[in-house]
Image (cartoon, rainbow, N blue to C red; front, side, top):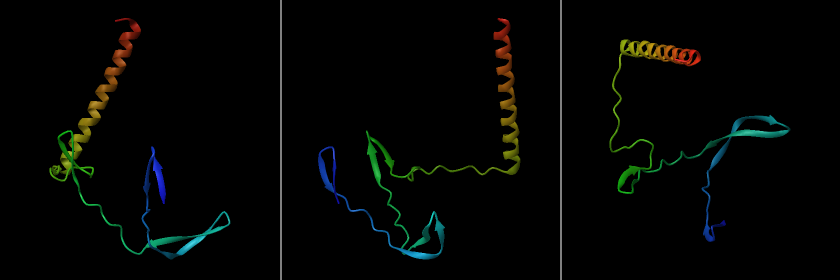
Length: 107
């Protein structure tokens, strides 16, 4: 297929996905439909090391060169953090109420 973008012409060949018709289907607004299954699984794109203004990065969301290790947290630690966050949110709400009150009475 011949395409043009900003005056530059190029050939585009869309990828062909081979499928087989499944046996599950039905009718929707008078038309028949069926699920289709892939004959071959998708090919995972390789990780490419790129550089932008001297800063290296990869074409994936998280850098594979420096993986972020998740700390192991116990149930007790999660519960403690949950209670701590609830208390912090409560303090923020109380502070907002006090600020509104002080502005209403002119302090």
